[in-house]
Image 1 (tube, rainbow, N blue to C red):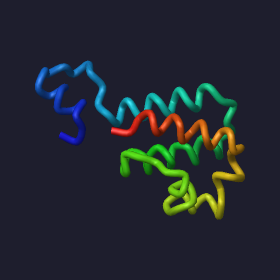
Image 2: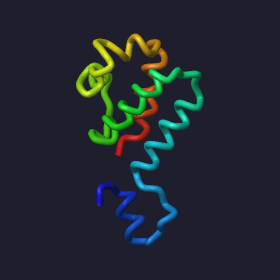
Image 3: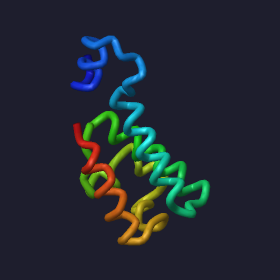
Length: 97
């Protein structure tokens, strides 16, 4: 099991209970839906989502590290305002497993 939620789901055989990855994806989808992001911003956020799922956490410094550097140096600052970056970090901190 890769998460507590996965273990509970397995023990109770509740297939309807979403796994951690699904919860994270839904949170990112809601975040994107709440903003008027362009295609490049959404692509960047999808990559941030994958980084988050791998690390199970996200620090501001992670936004400046590979694999997110494929978008260019300091891409997060080009794509998002300081407030939007804070919102993203707040959202991900609420998802830490």
